Length: 206
Length: 405
Image 1: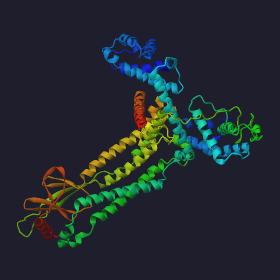
Image 2 (image 1 turned 90 degrees about the vertical axis):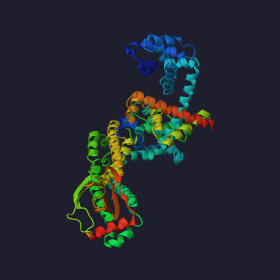
Image 3 (image 1 turned 135 degrees about the vertical axis):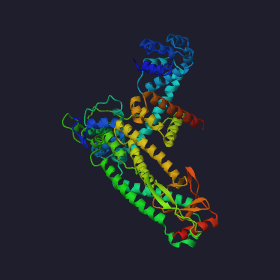
Image 4 (image 1 turned 45 degrees about the vertical axis):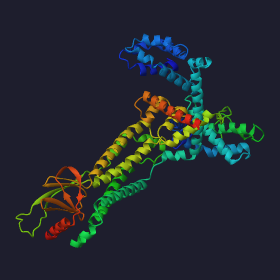
């Protein structure tokens, strides 16, 4: 059951809500699930994967969880630990080429019975959408402009990332930044985007 | 109403809503659908759009026709944004299929923007995973906060005292001083200030410790505790931070005149009002640091504190910070200034410092911190002006000596 696990006094479903409000709560998931996810992957891979690779896999799994949560239609059907184990398993299978390096261990834990720290669901095949490193000049200029805006401080970087990555609505942004209304927030975002475009344009000319 | 018409409705209301004859009831779904279709064809044929604007019977339709370009580009921008975020609409598909250049450019730009932000944010999340939970619980321990505030306030005050000293003390002070009254060289000013600041820091520190102790969040699991503290409670605690009042001391003192000439029948008195702003400056400085720290904590997007509370508390904190800033500027500008009407001398300085008014040849003077200043009749606060003429200094010090000072 998804609600049976408690981290620091709140259950998984409540934690999902908290993460949606503030991604720093992912740190709590990481803190509580990392060890078991690594154990799970070690058992599964017979130790053929290096530690840093396992770390990368769990990091990616956390990002998968977060990006699912912010889509709004995500429904957690198992414990967060089980979900992460499943995502890690899927990534690991892809990494290992679904070959003999995995042990029999994986099949014994995939059932409808009570979940434990090493459980997983074989039907979960969520994975991280890969961002190809674009060589396009416009993309590189935008990336550079974002870094410059972040380094400059102010609200623009946060406003843009909350809108574009964390999928915050105009109403949520209005509340977060304390703007007077949605229209004002829209204007602020438009100004930030214009500023970014200007910087990106200048970067392209360099 | 679909996404595209909702975007358009907002744009039309913002732009056309300023017209005195604009009627919201004319912005029907049908109107919006048609207008949206016309906008998609803006680059080829604008006439249908003009007709649509005229159909609204605005007071100044030509003015709004000039804004159609803005509405078009904003509409395309928002459609492209929505498309990239996964909210595809019939219109966005239509624009793609009709190879609308502006839409295609904006789509490409926003795709790149989303990709770049996703890459940076994923990296940031991964980099902070091991510490982000700690940031939720981050609180400055009471004792550290208290010590930091004390240290900062003391440093600020020391700097201020140095500044005031440099304004008042001149190189020749010691020479003049020694020739008449070497015992007065005791550094009353500095010593009393240290005592004063230590006492004030201690009292305020204890007060702040109490306040901060009450709003401490880290003794319980983060989620329960974060929701527990309601904005009103925090605001009450902010309001309870004590700011000292301006300390006013009124006294009548002898006006020191020459007694050797033998024409003084009766000792004249002068009323001195000392407005001591220093305790108020100290507490305002300390409170500002606390407000700032609380604001930083509240503003921090990683704090996990409910946004409702954040906004409400932020507003109070910002108001307090602004008030403290203005008040501090005002008080700092008044330090070592005076007003004088011939009978009442009002000074803005430490109440611990002894002052000796003097009268010589129709002029008033004041000996203060070992230096003699000339007093002018003034209603507007004025900075004390040191006298430099050796013979006047000599005569005035003689008067003080004759009067046993």
